[in-house]
Amino acid sequence: MSNEIHNPPVDYTDLSLRVQEQIRRKFLPLCTEDEKQQVQTTLMPMVQFAPSTVSTPSRHVLVTAKIPDQCQLLRWAVACFIYGMDKIEAAKKNGEYVKANREQLARFQLGRGPCIPLPKPPLRSSMTGLKRRASQTQSGDANDDDDDDDDDDNDSQRRVKSKTSLSQSDMLDSEIKRKVREAANESRRMELKNANGNREEDLINREAALMQREADLEKKEIELTCLKSDVESREVALEIREASAVQREADFERTLSTSQTPSDSRSVDLGHSESAMNHRLEALKTKENELNNRVVFLDMRKTELNNLEATMNSRATELNNREVVLKTRNTELNNLEAAIKTRNIELNNLEAAIDARNTELNNREAAMDIRDVQLKNRDTVLGGYEIDLGHCEVVTNSLPADLASCETALDSYETGQDDGEARLRNRETDLDNLEADLYSKEAPPTKQESDAVDCMATSGIRASQPDSATPPAQTAPRFDDKYIEEYRKCYNRAILDIMYLRSLGDTGRRMVQDEQFRDALMEEIKTTTGSLTDATDSAWKVFGYLARS
Image (cartoon, rainbow, N blue to C red):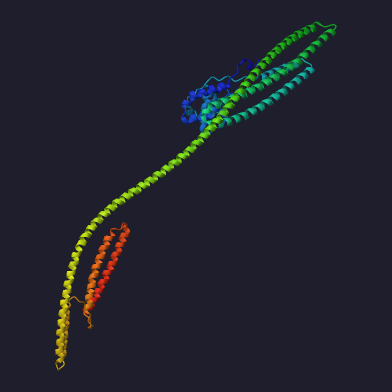
């Protein structure tokens, strides 16, 4: 019998789960946090086994898959952890990388052997053995059979080859379907992984293992179908060979019955041939019983596969239901995430409003501080105003006394002016009398006497007016005294009014709140009063000059 009958089947899904558990227990504690994340997300889903990869690392997807450069060291560390350093280094294609990076791989404490005992690789299939034995049997019988037997054997071989080619095409189709299914499962696994994160990683791994197991079962089913077809072809070949043996036995009996004088050697040869045929028939019957037992076993195996298929279908239904639940949960999580985002936007808007309110309150507080400073400055200014008002009151109180003294001075000045005018009038009277005496003389006066009289008159005028300007070159008509008196009174009143106006402007200036406007008004008052004073003084100088002329 074949190896599949005697050796118990290997549960490669359980083997994959046990290897993953060993990686979690012994390999991950030696990695950093980033390396743990890379192993769990990228390399752990690749740790799946099949009959073709359990003993050949170069065929495993962990070795052949394309992964980022930063995961290369981890990829070979995991491969060495699973298969052992000896087996990985012995590979001609991929062992160079491990040999070149032994120092970097040393920190993972990798052993020379595998992490767990791996099952032995499966032997060549029973179909191959049956085909080999059939070819050997057919080649051995071809030396003894007739040309008709050779034609029957060739026909049976052609039927076996046609069925084998059909089974191989079915295997290729199933292999292509399996690869397509694996690619679809991989994309589906990545989508589920992106949607639900690492919490669904175990479920995805189990689903991938179940899919792998389903693919293996389909492959085994195809092999069993091939074996069944091979058995059927073998049965046809055996029937043909049995018919050929019966025909040969009949020919032999006919030859014996028709022969009249058989020789002893011929009889001995025929006896040996008969015994050989009997042994051959017994062997064929034994082989037929074995094939019948094999058919029974295949039927049992087919029943097991049907039961397993039903189990896989129920498990697929459960996985589909679980997928629906996960999609519903994902929708709920998306809705919750949208609600959280909306809530965050509302909170951000509220926070912005609170910040704006705080800014407004801070501005109002700063304005109140500025207002307090202005009030303090205003109090200081008012205090200065109070001091100035006190000074102004003192000045105002002293103003009547100053005015009285000024009036006294003016009165004394007017008195002095009146006395001077009286002296001038007396002097003029004396001069008139002197002139009359001179004109009353008969003889005209001499030039020396006239010059003496003029000098006396001029010296008398200069003595009576000590504060006057330079006298005019010629005498002018005298200015009326009443105009001089009137202007003197107007001048004194104008000076007093200007001084009073200036004091009123200084007092009113302190009532103005705007400092800039207040200073401008004060400057204008000073300019205006200064202009009035200058005009009054200029007019007084004019009248004084006229009075002295």
